[in-house]
Length: 264
Image (cartoon, rainbow, N blue to C red; front, top):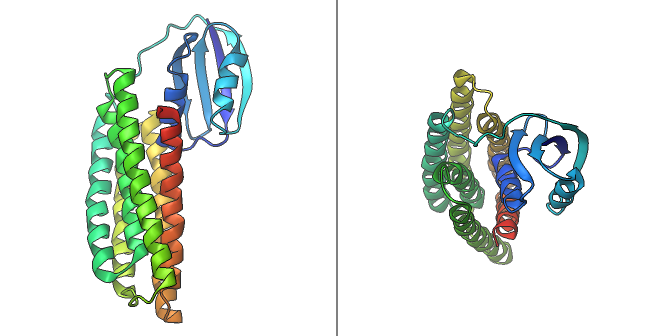
Protein backbone atom coordinates (compact mmCIF):
# COMPACT_ATOMS: atom_id res chain seq x y z
CA UNK A 1 0.00 0.00 0.00
CA UNK A 2 1.13 3.56 -0.75
CA UNK A 3 0.80 6.64 1.42
CA UNK A 4 0.45 9.89 -0.55
CA UNK A 5 0.18 13.37 0.94
CA UNK A 6 -1.58 16.11 -1.04
CA UNK A 7 -1.76 19.83 -0.40
CA UNK A 8 -5.25 21.17 -1.19
CA UNK A 9 -5.21 24.97 -1.05
CA UNK A 10 -9.00 25.32 -1.36
CA UNK A 11 -9.85 22.94 1.50
CA UNK A 12 -10.60 24.61 4.83
CA UNK A 13 -14.09 23.51 5.95
CA UNK A 14 -16.15 20.32 6.41
CA UNK A 15 -17.91 21.15 3.14
CA UNK A 16 -14.75 20.61 1.11
CA UNK A 17 -13.99 17.46 3.10
CA UNK A 18 -17.38 16.00 2.22
CA UNK A 19 -16.85 16.87 -1.45
CA UNK A 20 -13.52 15.07 -1.46
CA UNK A 21 -14.96 12.01 0.27
CA UNK A 22 -17.74 11.80 -2.31
CA UNK A 23 -15.31 12.32 -5.17
CA UNK A 24 -13.02 9.49 -4.07
CA UNK A 25 -15.78 7.09 -3.00
CA UNK A 26 -15.69 5.17 -6.29
CA UNK A 27 -11.90 5.00 -6.56
CA UNK A 28 -11.18 1.33 -5.89
CA UNK A 29 -7.50 1.98 -5.15
CA UNK A 30 -8.30 4.38 -2.29
CA UNK A 31 -8.35 2.57 1.07
CA UNK A 32 -8.39 5.33 3.68
CA UNK A 33 -8.36 9.13 4.01
CA UNK A 34 -6.89 11.37 6.71
CA UNK A 35 -7.70 15.08 6.65
CA UNK A 36 -5.69 17.95 8.14
CA UNK A 37 -7.77 21.03 7.37
CA UNK A 38 -5.58 23.41 9.38
CA UNK A 39 -2.62 22.70 7.11
CA UNK A 40 -4.87 21.90 4.12
CA UNK A 41 -3.33 18.46 3.70
CA UNK A 42 -4.90 15.15 2.72
CA UNK A 43 -3.20 11.81 3.37
CA UNK A 44 -4.44 9.01 1.12
CA UNK A 45 -3.67 5.32 1.65
CA UNK A 46 -4.07 3.67 -1.72
CA UNK A 47 -2.90 1.11 -4.24
CA UNK A 48 -1.62 1.88 -7.75
CA UNK A 49 -0.38 5.20 -9.10
CA UNK A 50 -0.87 8.39 -7.02
CA UNK A 51 -1.39 10.32 -10.27
CA UNK A 52 -4.82 8.66 -10.54
CA UNK A 53 -5.80 10.11 -7.17
CA UNK A 54 -4.35 13.50 -8.12
CA UNK A 55 -6.31 13.49 -11.36
CA UNK A 56 -9.56 12.84 -9.49
CA UNK A 57 -8.83 15.61 -6.99
CA UNK A 58 -7.94 18.07 -9.75
CA UNK A 59 -11.52 17.82 -11.04
CA UNK A 60 -12.69 19.58 -7.85
CA UNK A 61 -10.71 22.72 -8.74
CA UNK A 62 -9.42 23.06 -5.17
CA UNK A 63 -5.81 23.68 -6.30
CA UNK A 64 -4.35 20.29 -5.39
CA UNK A 65 -0.68 19.31 -5.53
CA UNK A 66 1.11 16.07 -4.63
CA UNK A 67 3.66 16.56 -1.84
CA UNK A 68 5.02 13.05 -1.34
CA UNK A 69 4.43 9.35 -1.88
CA UNK A 70 5.93 6.42 -0.01
CA UNK A 71 5.20 2.79 0.76
CA UNK A 72 3.31 2.16 3.97
CA UNK A 73 2.42 -0.87 6.05
CA UNK A 74 -0.40 0.97 7.80
CA UNK A 75 -3.75 -0.74 7.92
CA UNK A 76 -6.65 1.26 6.56
CA UNK A 77 -8.94 2.29 9.38
CA UNK A 78 -12.66 2.89 9.25
CA UNK A 79 -13.52 6.57 9.71
CA UNK A 80 -15.26 7.32 12.99
CA UNK A 81 -16.97 10.40 14.38
CA UNK A 82 -17.40 9.00 17.90
CA UNK A 83 -14.99 11.52 19.49
CA UNK A 84 -16.68 14.46 17.79
CA UNK A 85 -20.42 13.78 18.21
CA UNK A 86 -21.00 15.94 21.29
CA UNK A 87 -19.28 18.99 19.87
CA UNK A 88 -20.92 18.51 16.46
CA UNK A 89 -24.35 18.33 18.10
CA UNK A 90 -23.65 21.43 20.22
CA UNK A 91 -22.50 23.54 17.27
CA UNK A 92 -25.32 22.19 15.10
CA UNK A 93 -27.88 23.24 17.73
CA UNK A 94 -26.36 26.72 18.10
CA UNK A 95 -26.32 27.26 14.33
CA UNK A 96 -29.88 26.04 13.86
CA UNK A 97 -31.27 28.14 16.74
CA UNK A 98 -29.63 31.27 15.38
CA UNK A 99 -30.87 30.44 11.89
CA UNK A 100 -34.40 30.76 13.30
CA UNK A 101 -33.64 33.88 15.34
CA UNK A 102 -31.93 35.72 12.49
CA UNK A 103 -34.55 34.69 9.95
CA UNK A 104 -37.45 35.99 12.07
CA UNK A 105 -35.53 39.14 13.01
CA UNK A 106 -34.52 39.74 9.40
CA UNK A 107 -38.11 39.51 8.19
CA UNK A 108 -39.48 41.76 10.94
CA UNK A 109 -36.70 44.36 10.53
CA UNK A 110 -36.73 44.18 6.70
CA UNK A 111 -33.01 43.31 6.70
CA UNK A 112 -31.69 41.12 3.88
CA UNK A 113 -28.34 41.00 5.67
CA UNK A 114 -29.88 39.18 8.64
CA UNK A 115 -31.90 36.89 6.38
CA UNK A 116 -28.77 35.99 4.39
CA UNK A 117 -26.73 35.42 7.56
CA UNK A 118 -29.49 33.13 8.85
CA UNK A 119 -29.21 31.03 5.67
CA UNK A 120 -25.45 30.83 6.13
CA UNK A 121 -26.12 29.46 9.62
CA UNK A 122 -28.56 26.97 8.07
CA UNK A 123 -25.99 25.93 5.45
CA UNK A 124 -23.45 25.23 8.21
CA UNK A 125 -26.09 23.24 10.09
CA UNK A 126 -26.62 21.10 7.00
CA UNK A 127 -22.89 20.35 6.80
CA UNK A 128 -22.73 19.21 10.42
CA UNK A 129 -25.99 17.27 10.13
CA UNK A 130 -24.68 15.53 7.00
CA UNK A 131 -21.62 14.37 8.93
CA UNK A 132 -23.76 13.06 11.79
CA UNK A 133 -26.53 11.42 9.76
CA UNK A 134 -24.11 9.73 7.38
CA UNK A 135 -22.13 8.03 10.16
CA UNK A 136 -22.27 4.31 9.51
CA UNK A 137 -24.44 4.81 6.45
CA UNK A 138 -23.91 3.68 2.90
CA UNK A 139 -22.34 5.84 0.21
CA UNK A 140 -25.70 5.99 -1.58
CA UNK A 141 -27.30 7.32 1.60
CA UNK A 142 -24.63 10.01 1.92
CA UNK A 143 -25.14 11.02 -1.71
CA UNK A 144 -28.92 11.30 -1.26
CA UNK A 145 -28.49 13.46 1.82
CA UNK A 146 -25.98 15.64 0.00
CA UNK A 147 -28.37 16.12 -2.94
CA UNK A 148 -31.23 17.14 -0.68
CA UNK A 149 -28.95 19.56 1.14
CA UNK A 150 -27.59 21.04 -2.07
CA UNK A 151 -30.97 21.56 -3.73
CA UNK A 152 -32.47 23.13 -0.63
CA UNK A 153 -29.53 25.51 -0.15
CA UNK A 154 -29.58 26.47 -3.83
CA UNK A 155 -33.32 27.16 -3.73
CA UNK A 156 -32.98 29.39 -0.67
CA UNK A 157 -29.97 31.24 -2.09
CA UNK A 158 -31.62 31.91 -5.46
CA UNK A 159 -34.81 33.06 -3.76
CA UNK A 160 -32.77 35.41 -1.61
CA UNK A 161 -30.86 36.83 -4.58
CA UNK A 162 -34.13 37.39 -6.43
CA UNK A 163 -35.47 39.31 -3.43
CA UNK A 164 -32.30 41.43 -3.26
CA UNK A 165 -32.65 42.32 -6.96
CA UNK A 166 -36.33 43.15 -6.46
CA UNK A 167 -35.48 45.46 -3.58
CA UNK A 168 -32.71 47.16 -5.54
CA UNK A 169 -35.19 47.85 -8.36
CA UNK A 170 -38.06 49.07 -6.20
CA UNK A 171 -38.78 51.17 -3.15
CA UNK A 172 -38.56 49.40 0.19
CA UNK A 173 -38.74 50.72 3.72
CA UNK A 174 -35.42 51.17 5.47
CA UNK A 175 -34.20 48.18 7.47
CA UNK A 176 -34.09 48.60 11.24
CA UNK A 177 -30.37 49.16 11.79
CA UNK A 178 -30.69 48.66 15.55
CA UNK A 179 -32.12 45.17 15.12
CA UNK A 180 -29.42 44.36 12.56
CA UNK A 181 -26.67 45.34 14.97
CA UNK A 182 -28.15 43.74 18.11
CA UNK A 183 -28.98 40.39 16.49
CA UNK A 184 -25.61 40.23 14.72
CA UNK A 185 -23.85 40.90 18.02
CA UNK A 186 -25.81 38.01 19.55
CA UNK A 187 -24.77 35.83 16.60
CA UNK A 188 -21.16 36.85 17.25
CA UNK A 189 -21.56 35.77 20.86
CA UNK A 190 -23.07 32.46 19.72
CA UNK A 191 -20.09 31.83 17.45
CA UNK A 192 -17.76 32.76 20.31
CA UNK A 193 -19.52 30.18 22.50
CA UNK A 194 -19.06 27.61 19.73
CA UNK A 195 -15.34 28.37 19.58
CA UNK A 196 -15.14 28.09 23.38
CA UNK A 197 -16.78 24.66 23.31
CA UNK A 198 -14.43 23.51 20.58
CA UNK A 199 -11.35 24.75 22.41
CA UNK A 200 -12.49 23.31 25.76
CA UNK A 201 -12.93 19.94 24.13
CA UNK A 202 -9.23 20.09 23.18
CA UNK A 203 -9.87 17.63 20.38
CA UNK A 204 -7.46 17.39 17.48
CA UNK A 205 -10.00 15.47 15.39
CA UNK A 206 -10.39 16.84 11.90
CA UNK A 207 -14.08 17.83 12.09
CA UNK A 208 -13.57 19.75 15.32
CA UNK A 209 -10.62 21.64 13.88
CA UNK A 210 -12.50 22.27 10.65
CA UNK A 211 -15.56 23.63 12.44
CA UNK A 212 -13.30 26.08 14.28
CA UNK A 213 -12.21 27.46 10.90
CA UNK A 214 -15.81 27.71 9.62
CA UNK A 215 -16.97 29.36 12.84
CA UNK A 216 -14.19 31.92 12.48
CA UNK A 217 -15.41 32.62 8.94
CA UNK A 218 -18.93 33.11 10.32
CA UNK A 219 -17.60 35.76 12.67
CA UNK A 220 -16.42 37.73 9.62
CA UNK A 221 -19.93 37.57 8.13
CA UNK A 222 -21.45 38.66 11.45
CA UNK A 223 -19.08 41.63 11.52
CA UNK A 224 -20.08 42.45 7.94
CA UNK A 225 -23.76 42.63 8.90
CA UNK A 226 -22.92 44.83 11.90
CA UNK A 227 -20.96 47.16 9.63
CA UNK A 228 -23.86 47.19 7.16
CA UNK A 229 -26.20 48.21 9.99
CA UNK A 230 -23.92 51.09 10.91
CA UNK A 231 -23.71 52.17 7.25
CA UNK A 232 -27.52 52.00 6.88
CA UNK A 233 -27.85 54.43 9.80
CA UNK A 234 -24.99 56.69 8.64
CA UNK A 235 -25.99 56.88 4.96
CA UNK A 236 -29.78 56.62 5.52
CA UNK A 237 -29.78 54.02 2.74
CA UNK A 238 -30.79 50.37 2.49
CA UNK A 239 -28.04 49.63 -0.05
CA UNK A 240 -25.38 48.46 2.47
CA UNK A 241 -27.87 45.91 3.81
CA UNK A 242 -28.71 44.67 0.30
CA UNK A 243 -25.03 44.44 -0.68
CA UNK A 244 -24.02 42.31 2.34
CA UNK A 245 -27.11 40.15 1.79
CA UNK A 246 -26.19 39.55 -1.85
CA UNK A 247 -22.62 38.60 -0.90
CA UNK A 248 -23.74 36.01 1.63
CA UNK A 249 -26.37 34.57 -0.73
CA UNK A 250 -23.68 34.09 -3.39
CA UNK A 251 -21.50 32.26 -0.83
CA UNK A 252 -24.39 29.90 0.05
CA UNK A 253 -25.25 29.31 -3.63
CA UNK A 254 -21.62 28.52 -4.48
CA UNK A 255 -21.47 25.93 -1.70
CA UNK A 256 -24.74 24.35 -2.88
CA UNK A 257 -23.50 24.13 -6.47
CA UNK A 258 -20.30 22.37 -5.43
CA UNK A 259 -22.23 19.83 -3.35
CA UNK A 260 -24.64 19.07 -6.20
CA UNK A 261 -21.80 18.72 -8.70
CA UNK A 262 -20.28 15.90 -6.67
CA UNK A 263 -23.51 14.23 -5.57
CA UNK A 264 -25.05 13.79 -9.02
